[in-house]
Image (cartoon, rainbow, N blue to C red):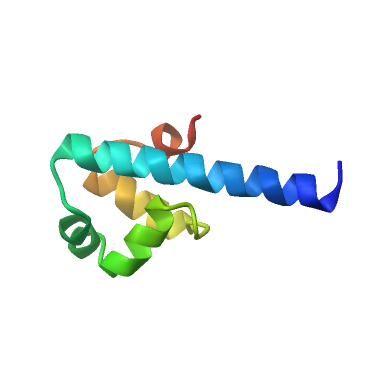
Length: 78
């Protein structure tokens, strides 16, 4: 597997995680701003996570899962 294959795989995973976070947020009835306030981060950071442009930290995933009444495992299972 080449470097580019690995990077593409990571990007795909980031995008899937972002879609899952957005899906759970919408199901819970929160806006990005509301969820960002709940997890003590900026709306911009949350937008970048949902867009698959950032790697989420473990702390951020834990806060998101708690706020959305789900588990980290649920967020990262694809």
